[in-house]
Image (cartoon, rainbow, N blue to C red; front, side, top):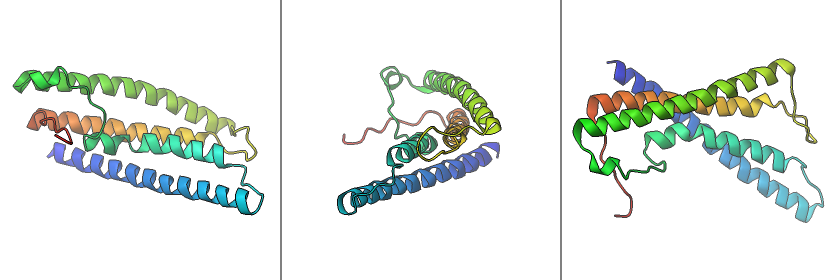
Length: 171
């Protein structure tokens, strides 16, 4: 019961993160095309492409983490894992999930502190368009929280159903 609720929440959060990441990718492409057209046909520029596309790329990468992990499309080093079965495989998987959770929770804590500080201070970027710096920290923090939720869901799934078999595409 609890694992189903966690899986539903993680699927909804991961799906939302991926949808936003996909929209950011569309934004990046449109902004780059706009910049190309403006520079080549109108001798003009938005003067914001580098900055805004950089923000969008960072946000996109973090917001897609949960969905990528849930669908097992992340880079996975399975040298040890492929030789383990049963409880040993579950123990190693849970250790890896716990270690990953600890590292990313540590990172999320500091991103949250940066986000709160920048928001309270009203910090803006030094570029041509003064953009609040907490925007990117908020997107990164949201992506980290989605990933942490996905890690918890994966741990529950591992305990209840074991470790999924490795599926290597192309073989």
